[in-house]
Length: 353
Image (cartoon, rainbow, N blue to C red; front, side, top):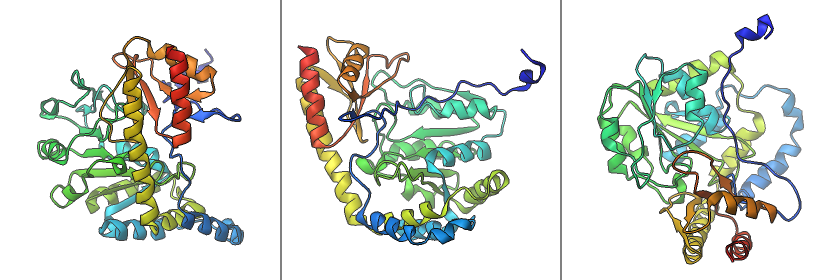
């Protein structure tokens, strides 16, 4: 090892889902929305093509136009909203801002696998209480001293969601630390924790445009909470990179919020397809957890998940497999279009014999 290499920060990075690109594939491995963004987003994109002159200028570092639109949409004040480059950026800033004590941050042993990566990168102590045998959170595991709590609700990769009373119980037991509720999938059938913001100053709710608004490629995430939390996050963000949100993303994000009818129709289509998909998979010998997300978490009664994953991949169908303890016999299957799901079912029937 060279002398200067000894000072490298070495961590095991987060591993995103595979991003294949070839004709006729079925991509059900990264929880992207199978439907396009709102037509209003397409119209806004057309306008942006005629405004390239503005690209030479720095965007508003406060992202005011999008913050105002989000505040109006959720009936909050603008000092309760923080925006970032996807919810990953928002969560990363939250980790860096709020989790600075010697006490461990708590999040489940099976959850979004970026949480422990951020903790290691930032030198944050953490512990991971185990989900129960049904992949549910044990609330009593969070009734103890801690440096903060992070809960994905609905959880990933399990798709399991906890009710609002459950979330409030954990928040109310931990009013000396910040509780972050990651709601990336909340629009697919779960009640948001947003109503709790008026009661708890230590609660931060994080959402994204990547899933339900079909804009993963635009990278828009946001957090909502007490003004003191948002102010602290902005102070950290401005100390790292003031201009995180580019001008096109700001304009496209506002356009998406203007079309609530399309947004809700797309979510409902996915929810209906999810119900039919679960029924079909169960008929093929799978067991699926009750999902409140845009994916199913499924295990087969006789064939290993790893074998099914490989056989699907050979047929140009991509789902997500996690080679990790407790979940290494499960597949996470994104809900695609009806046509994509039918192709998946045909392939599974062939694979399962």
